[in-house]
Image (cartoon, rainbow, N blue to C red; front, side):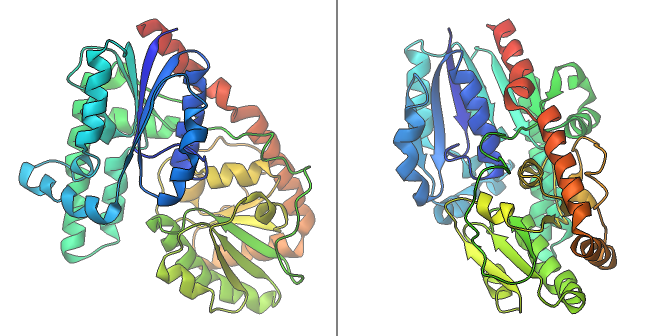
Length: 400
């Protein structure tokens, strides 16, 4: 049993958001084998209530540092003066650095696992082995964002993509192994940095199949009425906002002309103003934070994932599939998922395609049932957390 330092940009508990879900299950696998100390930021005051629950799941120290986005964003602009990606000063903290240095000084770190590139700045100067989970090629994500912006913001996002690509290269040169969320992301990174080819890997996400079980009884959260289409996700996250504004304003009204009683449920915490306003449309509900998303998925006709900007693997898609639901999605949302019979047939690009696919699923519900069952089998066969993370644990053992 070794002393492992796990550094993550956001408290991984509760696992109610894509990046937190992956980080949480990686932590569980580490803690099952080693003495783990975790350092993480808390950017949502709501999550402080879970600090003790998180600490109880590891054998080492749990050091949580508050991060106020309203203060961190202006502070990140220091990166403009230093020629670095703004993401780095955004997550730069004297408190975090002091705690990390105290662990190294006490000889309590045999290896480090970093989750998200900004966390590598705390350990890159030490000699111990480092495993890096980049998750996505974030530099490319910022370039995607830039294409949707104009003026100064477009320049700023494009700059972030360029600087972050450079930071990713520096980090990958330092660490012993780099991991990404799926094979496509790993291949993309290898193309960008061919000299790091041998140390770049991936491990797929997973789903807690006991938790996301369609056979469990769930109380219906919807009022009596027509079929419900459900979207789940943090609703202050720009790709989710973009997706729902587009779908609710462009796709849903046309679909509702053909199915007047159909409803759209947008389920997720922190809905932005643009999302809250969508609830003014007939048939659209915006829930805000809910204690459990599973009842909303369980009692929906099918799930929608109309993402226009996306990287990596979408947990919202995997969780809907695990719940036995067909998923109507854009190609971007399904990118990187394992190809599996009857799970990718409801992929549509554009308003007309989305409307037609949704019409078919609503008119022929048995097709949704068949596709949902296939999705559940796909998750069972390919998206097991322990099995997928096992190569990371093997690599760590080899380094130790």
